[in-house]
Amino acid sequence: MNGLAAAIDPVWSYAGGVIAATALRLIDDADLLRAAREEFERNREAAPEELRAPLLPADFAPPVELPWPEYVTTARGFEWQLPTTTDFGEKL
Image (cartoon, rainbow, N blue to C red; front, side, top):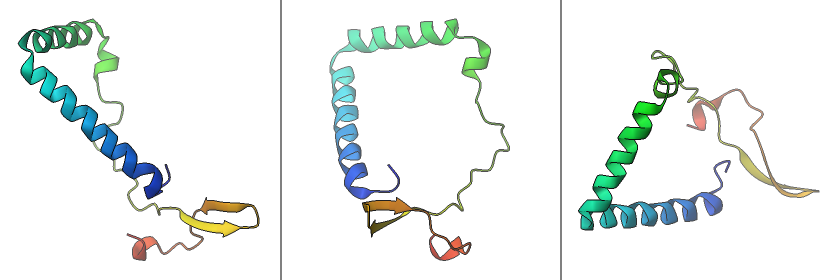
């Protein structure tokens, strides 16, 4: 969502509510929790090893130095662009 708070913030709020409601339902219903755990274990055991292993190497360094896009108004309207500077230290 390119760092656009108007798009990201509602998603976090809604997702938090879904996770909380799911946790409360699992806490309240022991049979449902048991069934969910059994399904998880069954699917995990059935998956091939390459699907269970991490996809990135253990020494992978994430590219955290990348800048957030800047939002600007152009002749085409409101849009985003990546900063043109190579000095990203100030953006972090």
